[in-house]
Every structure is written in C-alpha cells, then in structure tokens.
Image 1: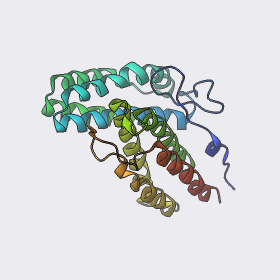
Image 2: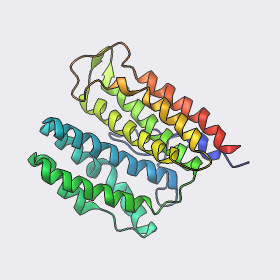
Image 3: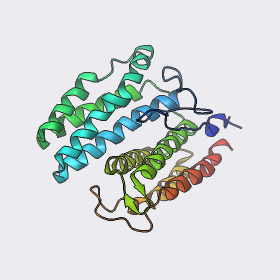
Image 4: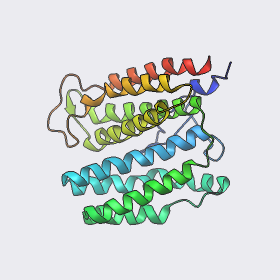
Length: 240
C-alpha cells in the first residue's frame, strides 16, 4: 500500500496577508525547495492569480486585473526564489514583471502574449517536481482549501465583502480543476480524477460572474470546504 502521509497534510493560509502553502500544524511554511506538493501548490496559486487577472482583463475590468497581476510577485514569488535555485530552475521574475506592466496598461494583446510566456515558464518550473497521483491529489486539495478560505473572506453575511478574494477563489479553483482534468486523461487512476473533476464542476455556480453584483443563498464557502473533504476521501482510492 502506498503511503498516505501526504494526504493528511493541511494547506492553510499564513497569518500574514496573502497565500502561502503550509503543512502540518500550519505554524511554519513547507520547505518549497524539497516538498514537491507545497512547491506545486505555490506555483498553482500564481497560476490562479494570473488566470483571474487575465479573465478580468478580457471583460474590461482593467483595474481589477492589474491588482491580480501584482499579487504573485508581492505575495508568492519571493518565497519560491530559493526553491528555484535549489531545483535548478531559472525562475520567471522578468516575465511576471512584463505581465504586470501589460495588465496595468490594459493592453489585451500584449497581456495575452505575456500571460502565455508566464504560463510556459511556470510549466517549466513545475517540471522540477516529481509528480505522482497522491501528490497531484494533494495539490488539488491544497488549492481548494486556500480557495475556500479566500471565498469565506470574499463572501460574508450574504454580501460580497471583498471582490478580490472572491475572484482569487475562482482562480485557485480553476487551477485545481486543471490538475484534475490532466490526471483524468489517462492512467490507472484516471477514474479517480474524473470523479474529482466532476465534483469540482459542481462548484461553478459559486461564481455567477467575476465582478459580482449580488449574492445567491448557494454562494457559501462551506461548499468549497465540503468539496475539499470529498476530494480527500476520493483520494484514498489512490492508496489501494
């Protein structure tokens, strides 16, 4: 039987503003240079920020898009620099800077090219990690837990209290869905990830629009926490 120790790791938010992948009791950051799952979650959070930023830019919400382009470098990238060096990867700070400039300018054409360049660089950085089905499930779980926390900050008492966090939660959930879709394509455990993919699709109505105007009764962070719990249960199939 495969070890399921990593399935018990909790990915929580740090006490300081922003997102970071933590493990265990949540008191110390996971070692990104050696912990593949934490490293991939951190890169996934960057993907999520940039995905929602580009989606907002496509809708004409330039100011909101610009704030999402800044967060990866402000909150997440610095923690990865040592990991890139340890893993023999060059990083992508210049590409992130170019993307932020394009987002701030509201130039969709330049932003599209810059977004593609950063995504390619992230894929290269991800290749430094060894991925197996258990790690992939943990990445999905980590992204969902961060998304749930962000959504709970964004939507409170039946109101959108923080649109930025609400949008972050969408980006992180989309990245989790991408991981599930990739693993569902083929392999021994494709059925497990297909089931995870279907479960995550049930969350789509949590974001009826990226720039929210009203909140429906079904828009509750508990649904994301519930999905994360279900993913953890589904992932037990990977240990048999």
